[in-house]
Image 1: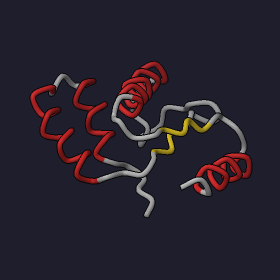
Image 2: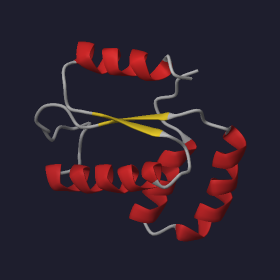
Image 3: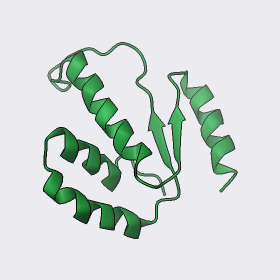
Amino acid sequence: MFQDRSLIDNIGYGRLLRYTDLLPELQRHIEAAQYTCVLFCAPVGTYTQTEVRWETSEEALRTHQFLAVAHDGCGVPVLHLPSVPTEERLAIIRTTLATF
């Protein structure tokens, strides 16, 4: 099963927003979820602020950094996908998933 977002994201957002009292409980749920691996995507292209993407590019980068730290520290293997075309990302994913 693939998930666009996971409980691990909540660790990053919790730290970013300073809701650290929630983190121990979240960590227990992450361990119980038994994630096999995490695919963490580098941003692709230029960030453009819109009605939907209300953050500035600096805020978006800061959020991405908090999410990266959360994923790297979650105890689950993390595959950092580079900022490359979709077909290259898919090839990296296929190769990685074949090892599980």
